Length: 222
Image (tube, rainbow, N blue to C red; front, side):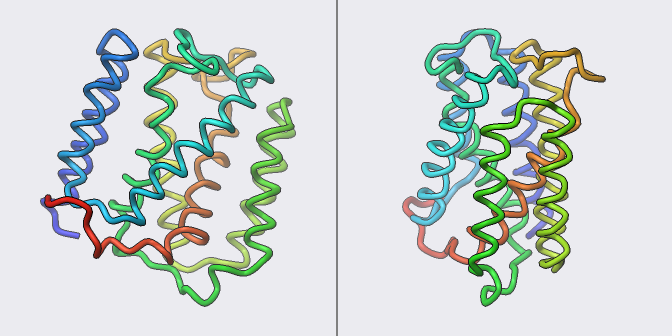
């Protein structure tokens, strides 16, 4: 990736977080985010578009479950206890990460093993069913540790580490801007399990999705 491209995606993230934090109105936020993403992503392949849509749908369902259990809460929800812009955010997070780390590719022959899918299922089940923060952190840290012990190519650490950093930027911006909050007043307003949540998503993005993404077939010109 060129320095210019890297700067573009960093600016994309900063602008996204600024809109979330400072622009009033949920619908207005979404109306600004979508065209900015279209402009800054440029050409989008069919596989990338599928990633965006699938991630948005999957994580919206996961969020709805977590919100129902009281793991966290949005301040001004619109639908399914979420603001309307949240329905598209995880699609953005995963596509943004993929673009930032496009030079890191895992070995495809190891990416589709059944146990990786099993780990992903257990990971999703943990976040859908465990509400006690300490137990959630411990269980998901163990699962992520197993994944990294068995798959530890540079791509695995790049995706895991970048999404932890991205998660920190998103979580602390959202909490301190008053967009959402966590029960129990965790230190800094954000529970420690955000590390395994975001890191695990990065790991599975690398292992389960990365090998099949093909950025060479654009849907639209840059």
